[in-house]
Amino acid sequence: MAPSRFFLASDANAGELGLGQTATAFALFVIVWTLYATVAGAGHALHGDVVEAYAWGREFRLGYNQHPPFWAWIAGAWFHVFPTRDWAFHLLAVVNSALGLLGAWQLIGLFAGSWKRRTAFALLLLTPFYTFLSFKYNANTIFLSLWPWTLYAFCRAIDSRRLSAAGLFGLLAAASLLSKYYAAILLATCAAASLVHPERRRYYRSASPYISIAVCAVLCLPHALWLINTAAPTVKYVLGRSGIGIGETARSAAQLVGSELLYHAAIVALLAVAWWRSPRGVAPSVATPPWRRHFLWILVGCPVLLTVILGCAFELKLSSNMMVGCFPLLPLLLSETLPRIDARRLARDTQRLVVALNLAALAVSPLVAYLNFAYSSLPTASEPYREVAEAATRLWHRDVGRPLRIAGGAPPYDTMLAFYSPDHPQAFIDTDFLKSPWIAPERIETEGLLAVCELGDFPCHELFYFYGWPGTHHAFLPFAHEFWGIKRPPRLFDVIIIPPRPK
Image 1 (spheres, helix red, strand yellow):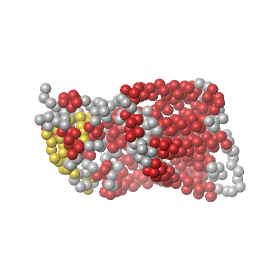
Image 2 (tube, one colour):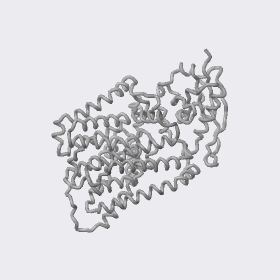
Image 3 (cartoon, one colour):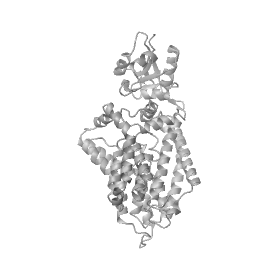
Image 4 (cartoon, one colour):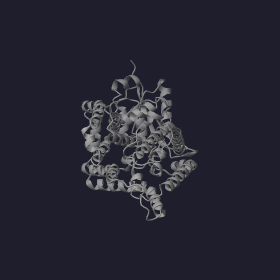
């Protein structure tokens, strides 16, 4: 690949890693953090968002009730290859994170080389985004990989105006929009940054931006037609979460900004220490053009600003989870404000710290597993999702004598049954045919339905008994989640079995 015009230093390629080094680093990262997630999360069931990705992805659709489809398609394709186990989902999440780190490495390389590049990249690994916050694979964490690669493709497109770069930008823009509409902020950020780039006139007079738009539009067209034909349930879902009040939105916006500051506190602290230790009166080796600083500020700051503005405009509850993939360039931007830092020394210190944190995480993962189970109040640690799914499936086999094809329950038991049942039935999500278009009343008659309701959940009981017939029966069973010999308090469930109607 030809050198980018963004490179400032003559030794820009000095920080490059060989293919073998890159592959080794990628593999080690994936192994370490998949092991950590598997061990530390052993006492937990998967998060509801994660099993929802599984339930949606196995039903290939152009859209789903809440989000566009791309991230769920990935989960669906993944489990055509890997077994339906917790560790396989952890592996998917970590691979997604590792691909994002590769994208961040390439993106940072457009702006810096040598030790400065290594410093900015190593500092990224001190944030929790690519490790502890990456395990919940959903429509937010997919941006860990999509965001940096989309920015990279945009920068290559505006820098070179090559058709290949333009096509790649359009492809990644479409993948982002087809994962979550929040990607509109990513594309608006690219548009704003293009206005300060010195090549902006040549860029907009070339075919490059219009090829990107065309590629993106063509790839998004099937989803757009799906929106028209289905009365846009994803748009209704977003609008349904609006109107919470400007006061609540302002509080959530303040919490979002505060959370992001805390997530980057280690980076700020290390840079401050490095600046304090650096010799005074030494001019930076390379002058930074003003446009480049403005360009970086827009790529980093615009997503935050637009998120807050749009959140206030629609009175949405904002969450730091929305922005988990938005900051691959922040460490570089912060280091650019302190150009006299010894990048070589800081890179080596940061790399040692990253290695130490990785080893420490592996060492304490069994303790984390115990503490997360014994003291956590999260439903994933206390609810007997696995136990219910396995026992209810055995009961279905005993009474019906055929594989379980359709299962439902009060959310998230509807999708938990789909993942944790040995038969992996299709999920009757929220007992709603619009949310589960792969289920039809005729299928329930011919294939039957198993449902799980907690005792006392009368709306759940009423919904499922509506589909019953005289052959319907149920069993009241106690279940308790257990891990390492420790049991959570038991819960009583009604397992409703609606067998296929006789022909």
